[in-house]
Image (cartoon, rainbow, N blue to C red; front, side):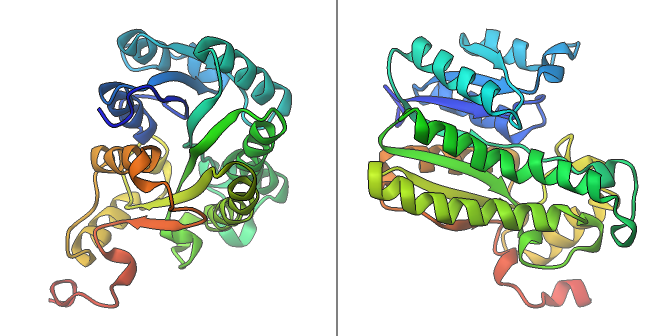
Length: 266
């Protein structure tokens, strides 16, 4: 078990379709001790697929926290360290939401108040999280901080809207904070650029099935699944990747290096 003895916080396990949910399951299988967290509204969801059900299944704690609120993040970190009896080894930021997309606002007619809120939820929350971890000196040396992103940060996918800018900002935070965390604590900070994946959030983007089909056809290995992404995250939390930091790591079956695939043309 490559995470035996390690302790981590997983953000964003909304339901059993979410990558964070898969990550939490695999972390537990690999021996990690966990705290799960999501926005308070996620704790009010009913049914067999919600964060409290996952916490019961994994015999861990689930703590509500609004990732856009520094006081919530600080409280979460303090409570987590109390539960763990010490500092944190790894953190996953798997948070993203566009209000303009949810309200079917075209990119060329974006509501800028919505846009700023989307950036706060999807990107600035990552900086707030890392700053809170930094100020509380909550990370163990040689720890690992990850965030999930998408190639829309580098390339234009018209229906991805303002999330393109949100993910670009997220990746920039990883590089810049990665420098500071590396210098002080040897903590590494990376983003994983995942294939389009049919999560609850992804499914809310107009034309998302077209994303999936196009990417599947372009990628020599096909789209990476949520389970495969979770396994990659596990490797990034482990001691096998201690010298990987400030990177945007493409986990997309080769899509990011393709120009054209003949079978798409055919």
